Image 1 (spheres, rainbow, N blue to C red):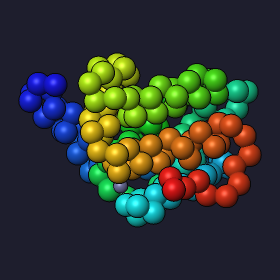
Image 2: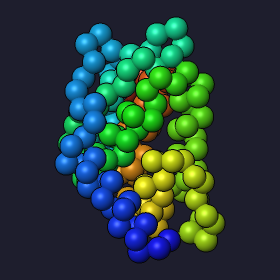
Image 3: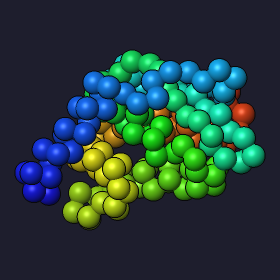
Image 4: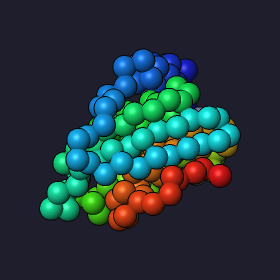
Length: 149
Ligand code: ZN
């Protein structure tokens, strides 16, 4: 990856960390907590699914820059998708952040800014925390908080 591209990616992550999008809880939505004990990231993902479509998705919580930026980018990425499409996006994201270093990461548009975390296994958990919480909601009745451990 060129230095210039890396800088741009860094900027997007810092921007979403500073000004997270959809940082709120949805009244009447389904809420799922996610916790990453390794880093201390804790997020609440809130979702409103109607007629099989993710009408709204938001989050609250505290965490490192990667966890917050990833949650913020996720809310933008999932909104408006069908449940099946959102589950597919989760799978694509997971595979991007866990793919081998020497393989080019899948191009997931804006989400690609997080591909760099695959170089840092502990950061993969930060980046995927909100996604795991969202996946639990997409898969049906969430129960216990999801943990990365
Ligand atoms: Zn973290």
